[in-house]
Image (cartoon, rainbow, N blue to C red; front, side):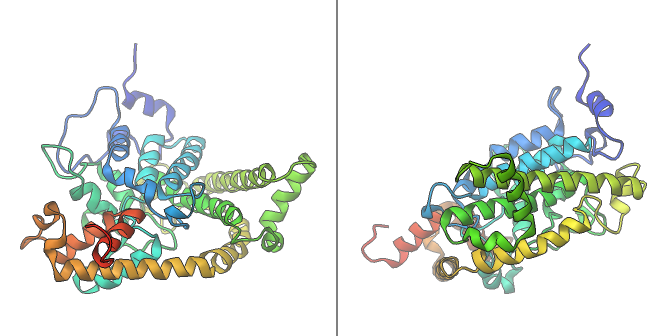
Length: 383
């Protein structure tokens, strides 16, 4: 006899995993599917959203037109998803919730990466500011238009909670009261945080080396790189780039993932975690790296910051991006009739023009923002 997904989860998942039967449900009640769990449906709704497709042309580190081989927000999200599912499976957690959160975690990003987000936050300071996790929540709750019975995607409470509680050095969202800001998120959400770090550490090394902005000689003083390099060169002494570089980075990813799994297993046992309520009551997060790996990551993060994220070419693009965002924002605010009709129609007593303009700019891809700027400010460009 075919088992329901509730029964399958009870058999396969750990007691502290977030199970579908314990979900707090959706904002607008829906009849759930007979064969697809609520979190599987969340994942599918995210994948089919406009915001998800646009991630293909949004900056990770390198602006889209700088080359076809660099990561974008979309490829980054896919890499995070694969890493997160590996960790979730090893810990017997809910892979479908984990995957939903991984694929959604960057939906709210602006074009041009963090530089543009900083500018948009500055421009919106008097009107509620801008933070990409909160904007992701706004996208899935309000801005996606696909269903006749409710706004947004009507995702489960746990997916919405995990979205807004996503936590890295760039994430500082003010969490809405309905999503219980004082409680820790599920282990599945915590996995996405650490998978995000693993993905961007390693693919930024790869993209930095590919671009030539990060010389491999600079990695000579990084213990993590040297240990992985030594292992690969001993195993494959005649291997040359790009295979050699790929194998080193592959080795690093495996090392990070293994460390996170083993450290998290230790913490689950040490903290006596028995169910999801125990997870939520914890003062610190359960899913984490070991102290040893954290210490080893410090010089790597510093190197990436100094030699890649603040390389003069990246700084130039960041400055250009902020100027584009600022000038677009000013132009639309001063004359809202230049907005597409569907955005003009959203301006109301409930939603002022600043919020609408912010939504429009945040939705843009890199190339669309550049094209819009050209149309508005280059007299020779057709509008």
